Length: 544
Ligand code: NAP
Image (cartoon, rainbow, N blue to C red; front, side):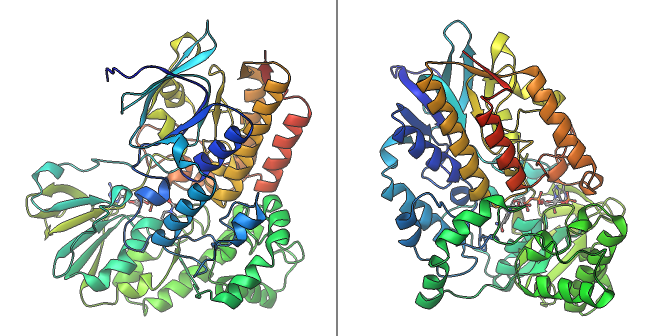
């Protein structure tokens, strides 16, 4: 876009004003940088701004999905549920923004469209859709790992006379579904929340389910003053322990209970206890061996599938459509959704589940009146809600025209092979510092605030060190990046995760190079490696 706006000269541009962007902006400003955040949305929140579909909520416990750098900031906010919904989360992000006085340094409705590095000047020129042109030393990407939604995946969408809604840009005024025939495509974490929340409100709901999901029933108690005081009293304990766990949650693998050493009764008890916690504990703190040993993965998968079959009252059709089998994939080899009466929604008389798997009855196309399936049946619909996922990890930056040294395009680089240096930088792109991109836990396998806080704090320390040492440029080395990619892949390939198709492997995006997006060495280990990198003087990078 052409613009009359004068070029803005900054020390740092932060892309995004979600969880990472807000904290990054705060930290760099605190260090005295002339910094500004540019946000595509009309307000702060990132994921929690865009995904305002009915039923959107945390499945991290609210009191750990937190910034821990300021005790008073933590304690002055009180959560009303263990897993609150999007409106409360959005209010919390507004609270953070206002308390830290960030709004004045954020440009809204300003999607970063291009970022070109000028080698001679050692600076980036960044342009936004709002006509901003910025000349900056550092470009810090805080765009989130699930912010590039997949669109227009179906033939004939323009022919449909009803309303098509994406969960990732759900209208803030809502969608009227009362007495309407509603179709939902997608049964990932998002589709599940939509189905369980909206099914009772619709005239009729048809769920087009492709790959079934293992799900765990959420327990979501209300938090009153007593419970709020109790979790706030744990502030120091949580602050100390969470960054060092495997997944950035408050729970972790218990070394005293392994599948190998437990008796059959103890295994069952432990599975039952972690399941009954009603959280992601069943996945991230039951038996670590589920990620490595097929037989153990099978046993735990069967335990979860059995719970699901019972809840579906062993209805053969529903079990067939909605419950994964051991031939499909193992429990936890991609993201486990928590849900609340999701399976029970299918027992309602106004809900139909259709398997649209390849070997069943895939969606052929949208038609004027609804959706046509491969067997020729047309499901008539008034509204279609698309919960069809994201180009995860690399999607956000790939949608920006990012060009590094020699005009090399990041989109093209990642189109060939998705590589980064510790998820914090990329060879050939000096002074580009990244969060929530592939090859770090923040690309998927983490309680997001834990990992995003760690990455933004690491970036801040780096910038501080460079300024103290009079350096202006940093770039990853080929050797450093190679070493990290090899380390990352060796851990990833030792698990069962790469055997399962999902956004964790990039396989939901046609043509995307297959690689496990998230670092699986654990959040605590990743932090340690980042700290060691800094303490050793950033050997995977060159500074000048
Ligand atoms: P997703 O997990 O990628 O699920 C997308 C769904 O759409 C899948 O069921 C997929 O089927 C289906 N789909 C895609 N293309 C299709 C097609 N052409 N025909 C039929 N079905 C199609 O995306 P998501 O549900 O948005 O979740 C993404 C991630 O966001 C989650 O894993 C989670 O990390 C995060 N999230 C978190 C929460 C929370 O509770 N905090 C809530 C929502 C989302 P296939 O599986 O067969 O490809």
